[in-house]
Image 1 (cartoon, rainbow, N blue to C red):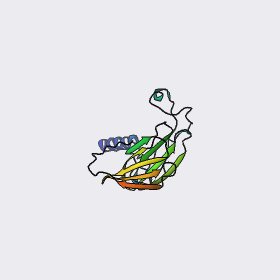
Image 2: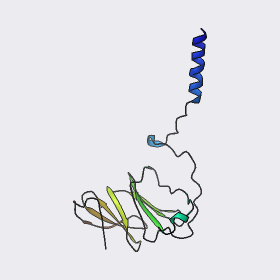
Image 3: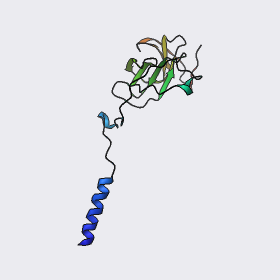
Image 4: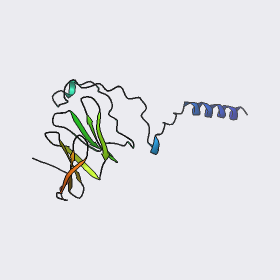
Length: 156
């Protein structure tokens, strides 16, 4: 009798010490465990020369459905960020944290920003290149590149 009571007590203590399940967001993904801090605008554009001195700016949020970013590009002056996740192409203004746009990914696997920040160039696995407006994400043009590009890009 004592052994069974002791065993029940041990099981109850172990159950009380077990970690609680993480709250689930829609689609079965884990919700963030902490609230995002208020976005603090950068005082200067982000560049390799000042990255070590930057303070935490905050979290850039996309619209639902959210997922892991797998490709991204900073504008040449460090003031904008374009990123691809499983569903979306998203653009942010890094000076104020504002989202410029969120649009369908359209099977893009990579993205780069033009030197003058007016266009984004996204490419698909079949070599097709889409030219998009960098402030709205709308399609401007497109052309067929090589389908043997080995996932590397260069432009002039």
